[in-house]
Length: 349
Image (cartoon, rainbow, N blue to C red; front, side, top):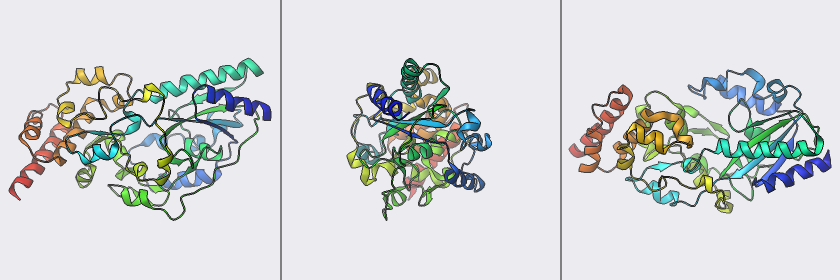
């Protein structure tokens, strides 16, 4: 099992994973942290987070027979217009770096399947199931146990030599493989991520209230964005990377060689006005194969309306908003009205 574990790591790197680790299934400590997060209702409207009971924190309940988890990471930082420049330009739409390219779920799942096929060639049929952020799995807890990094104060996984710009995936298996040592936490007294969060969503070290997080507001929340949190959103229309941007360990990050994760449709440098002008057919066509497609066209317009409300007033911005003022969707209209009111208040100040 020790030799097989070594081979699995080598095969994983051949398939394009930057790191592969292996752990057992005891997540008792992480389970307590997760259950407390649910009790405090910090998951907001993400009811699926509590729907599966302990199957999320007890792998063998989700996939009977599981005794080990092969955890992998794949870097995704794309060659794109620098995030600092995008955030400073109120005319430009800021999209989270992970969503600039193709949907990572399919990319990583295919690689995990190839890894499982390779293992089968050596050991014969075995029990396994691959996951990529698509099932009740505590992926960061498993990755920490498998030595891929530690969960930082912003709740993202951090690697001492690679930062945090990477995706995670798992292969649940019934093979009693040799396990790796958990990673050591190196956050120390640093609190840059807490101080940088635009909406104060990191309420304490290692504690994130999703209800305040811009990633939650722009992606998971289906209804109206709370008014108090709209201004801090700035020009962020899909996700938020601020806590990663300021993390000292990300100075070690390298741009990905995976072309699937490179920007598509100029999303790293697109103007808010141009994206707001997309028809629903435009959105469906251009976002095909993108993780952004899951929010749908109406939430896309909702998010951009907020960003336009935060932009410097100009006739072009006002014209774009007025063009959507009579949109059939109540959700879109409400956010457009708010945006126009921001500009009216600014003009009368």
